[in-house]
Length: 211
Image 1 (cartoon, rainbow, N blue to C red):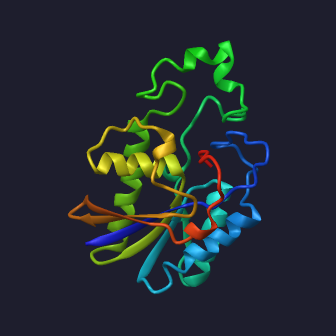
Image 2 (cartoon, rainbow, N blue to C red):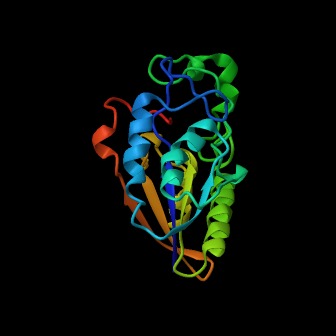
């Protein structure tokens, strides 16, 4: 069995609460850097032999303290690990946002099960699962790897692997900042999942936005 640890990036500097999704120019905050540095210690005693990352800045920056523990390993970038596409990118959501209240956006809110406002959950789960299985093949039997990705892709991949509905309440995702969702792989399939929050004590209080 191989184990692929999928880490969510740390807290991002985003004072206005923009839904940034795949937008460039969003980097880890000071808190985010502390979070990923703390999570990196989770991996230091493990036999990690492969590192792979989403192309977005916040994910690349979150991988840095992990990569520093394994200086002989290169960090691969995989576009399949990127954040989900969303029509509301660049707009302000949350309790003060107007994006969902604007009539011009109502046509995107017709089907929350797909969802109609962005990349289909099934497509996200398929691309993420394929990336995870590719890494498992690369590390081989008994190998372990670290991937850095984003909350929604990690969560729907877990839902898919557990045979649950992909549509869900975003507020109930078990995938906090700098958390680690570990996928056990045997015979080319996900056969088990573990979840860890190494930076739990650093999590900010307040609503859980999809950062």
